[in-house]
Length: 417
Image 1: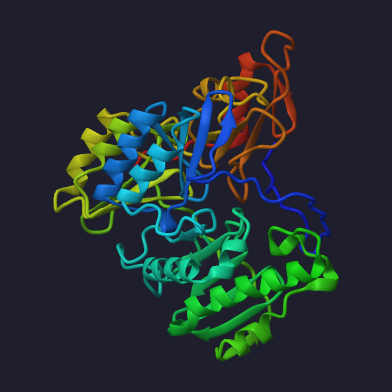
Image 2: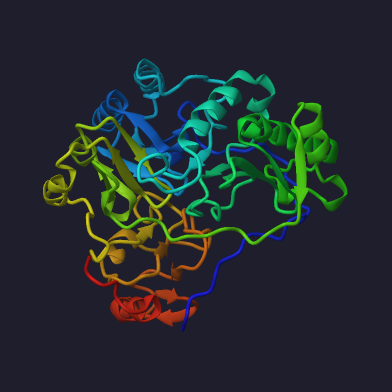
């Protein structure tokens, strides 16, 4: 059966939260079955060469030796000891990965990963991401944002615009920017005002959330009686903005792994996880950008960049769009997560290639699932207590038939590049 887009709650849905956001960070470690978990916010997924080495070292010396790439292009370290917090913070701080301890969980910024590299797009939104990160860290009140609040910066190609951002900026061909605060209002403004407008929109959300008193973490959770005054916030910030009708969200498929632009590469992490050795194999590079599709753009891989793909494949990285695990992701699963009903990462190795993303979930929370249309593989019981231990797009499926069911749901295989 064809997969259908999976949706988030309706905008304006009233949700009462009686606790603060417990989203993990680099300084707030989360207890899991396999040890403590740290989540490092990497605005636009960006890492310098020195930060790549620091992250690999942290994984090797403090964690389980691996780095998970999240669906927001952030990084997670797992298997951390209970008493490693101070050592981890010192290592990250020395590598400039903690520019603001008070704001480290709110630096959720996704930007078009290939922006400025391949000649596509209308602006280099990677530069916007760096300016927005600095503006967030400089604004004391921004520290009150939820660790789930997301800024999305699309350079006009439509690759990240549909990733569920709370404040979106989309570059336009005429040198302007389109601001989407929440889901119901859209404004056109000068590109030079884009970063200030995004920050003003985030603060307007905080004003509305405080007034509502419902503990909302994101704009779509606000009651309809407390819609932020987006236009007023922009005017108060001195930003000239034109209200527009809400258009369809632009969309284009993410890049496939391989050579990217002139002297750059794009690879995927198998099931979204890199070993420390695989991360180091991306060097030398001017910088590395983690992507929301659990990959890494290697910026400045050199004039013979395409020739490096074979070596990266030998390290176990996905370098071709027709590779068996291209587009296949999974939550942590057993044994790392107590809520999981199966070792979904091991079972995900049964998936076959095809054009649609596939996500394996160990429970109904579906942590880390993609946006848009994807094949939903959900564990419904352990392999020992039920023959129908999974559902594939709501069809009960024995574990032994996963390969066939996923292939049928995913569709025809992608042609060889």
